[in-house]
Length: 240
Image (tube, rainbow, N blue to C red; front, side, top):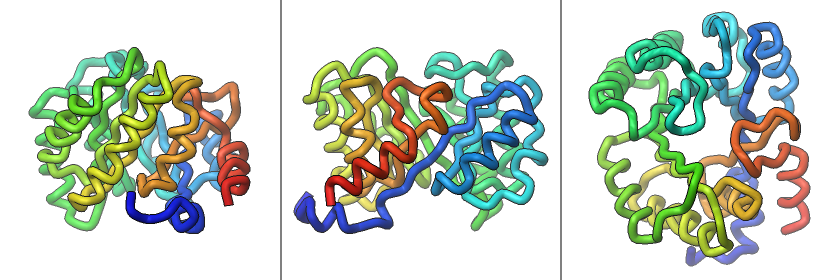
């Protein structure tokens, strides 16, 4: 927080956009990946949307870093199987050497532990994102810091905390987690969903968050309040 906003705005390395692929059909997902590649810094593959995920095909010849996410229903996901089957897909992604996998902190403790063990066994392979999503509200600043501290103890490469904004103050509470984490050497992405939360999606990477999320189009959002990559970058240009 001690850096000036002008300095932050000039730091292009922080302006990183992750584009989610939210298709149910394999061919449509491959087409979306091709379309997202020139627009994104990273691509998130939402496996929970896919009826028959073929990870080896989807990850073949990728040109950008990929995140594989198999979101559980309690946090906005669509996966229909049990917990063991859900995590098995994430383990397969690690085996295939994907850049990142995303697992929710609300998952079964053994699921997180097993994924961490598999990730460590590969050393310089896949990185783990430990995530939390609240689609109803934003907890208080104190509760958010307690949540972050609990998540950070797992040793994930990136902590992701996303809540639903019902006021401008909610944005400030969530964005405040970014300097809190950076002071402790922890990579983090933290912002708010919803119309009231759009400004936090823009500001998160400028404050040092690892990246922000933007939809391929307004009809392909994976969470409320997402902008497109073009809209996001136009806002950043206007801030310079």
